[in-house]
Image (tube, rainbow, N blue to C red; front, side, top):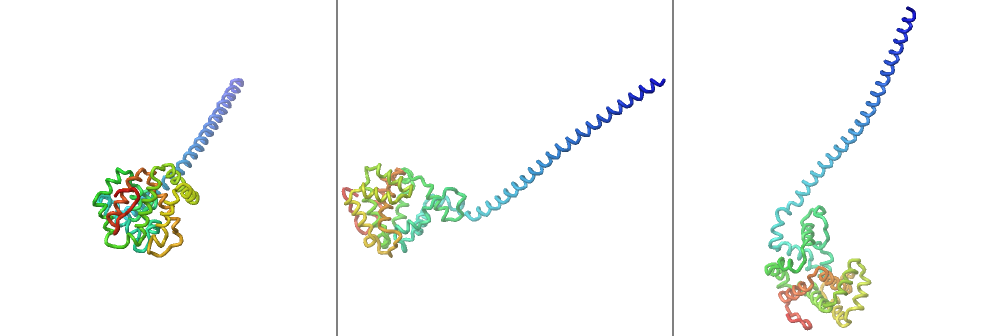
Length: 289
């Protein structure tokens, strides 16, 4: 009887120990689950904060875009008109050069029209928009012929006719010198390519040296003579734009036209322009107008 009692007692102790072990394991498992859930909750809280910030940024962008749309509403209203007859853009560029006050080289240097806008979102005024459109124009001869219709050309000519701006602003001298530069460089593509590379690097000292070494001395002196201030314009002399800078500008001008592949067409345009606005006939060597 005693033996049986002892055996029962041992069984009870064993069962009790197993229960304690099972309970401990269960508690440990629950604790691990709680820790894991805490980690998940923390991650979810961080993600939720990110979503809140993203939502705020999107709302701010939406507000900014609405303001931008209001500011540049003219783009929607006027783009098609600008690109169809182009008269307004021509007038804008002419006004931007301000040839009544500036000689043509200073007008070009100060012009807002030829600033480089690489992204539509970087501008918010009409002036910026015109500059952007000018930058994006395909300058191939084929496309320029489509753009520069007889009506467009007449619009340009009329801005210079019946006034003294063409001569007094230096536009006439720049055009004459420009034609001489083209004629002198015609057939020397390698020089134009080298001038273009130096201009891109803005190494104007080397560019001047290259021009002095490679260009016919008589032709260079003729260009320099035309662009001397006393021969060039009747406007006030500006020291920071010297006759040397005007000479360099014309050589880089034709290097850019050569690079764009439209030099011959631009040359014909300039001759035609002079014929239509000048008070005197243009005389060039071995060129028949």
